[in-house]
Image (tube, rainbow, N blue to C red; front, side, top):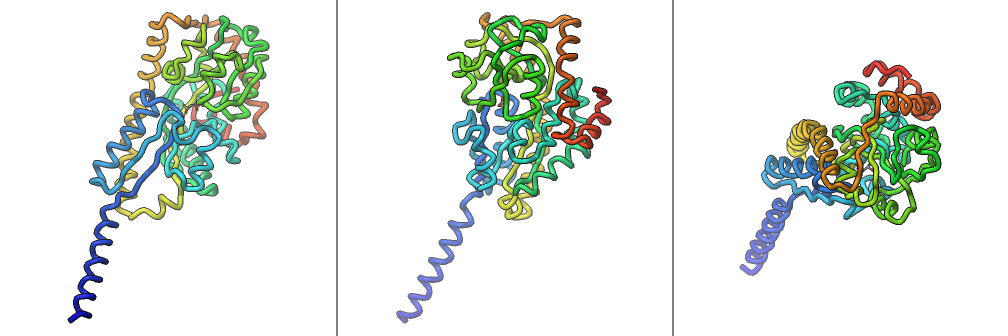
Length: 332
Ligand code: LMR
């Protein structure tokens, strides 16, 4: 009798434990470095909503915006180690991982507009680049748009000569470093979370980013001029830890893939407007003067910057560059 009771108790304990385990959601920690109110910030929240709804709570997505969990220089390692499961680093941040081909996206003027960009990010060239991540223990799920970059400083920057001697903050991309050098300025690699303070204290004089990042980091408080240069593109690859992703129950993974597909559509639909609105929002603060370049000034900037393509052929890879040129029709 005693033995039977013990057995019943043991069985019910196992059943209860299994029940608890079954109810424990799969947690996806999603870390990123920008504000919530940006194309990437909004897309991360949208993915959380779709993923949680569609898996009926089997998956919980915890979004950590604004470098609140990991900042640049930490987050790539964190996803490889599995400390976070998902990130969406800018395409300019894959060089330190050994994947220099991603810097093709940083090449000045390589895309005229979002349509040209999408030929790459939504086509075979983009897919081929994401595939390269697997050797690093990472799976690339999607590309999310941000936008075309502006330059900013505390002096009016209209022509290449205006950049001479300025210390310009850049992301960790050699292509971007060469771009600043081509303008005669001094590039400084720095984590995104440190940019505001570095501009405030004069550690750097200026920076480049799409307007949505400029405005949401409140850089209008520390930069007097913003030049609408559109000299290059900044966007993201959404990535996950491969072991985590491969280990998901197949039905959950399929549902998440669907959620990611729909989130990507959402992200790419809002990006342009978010950036256009950010320019107007900066203008409205009255703190930063928006400089619209004349066709001659734009041409002079382009002439000074395109040299960066040739100089980075061996780094980025001629094949990758040619493949992108073929999609976009760009001729250096
Ligand atoms: C930057 O560091 O300037 C950007 O990569 C930030 C971001 O993620 O948009």
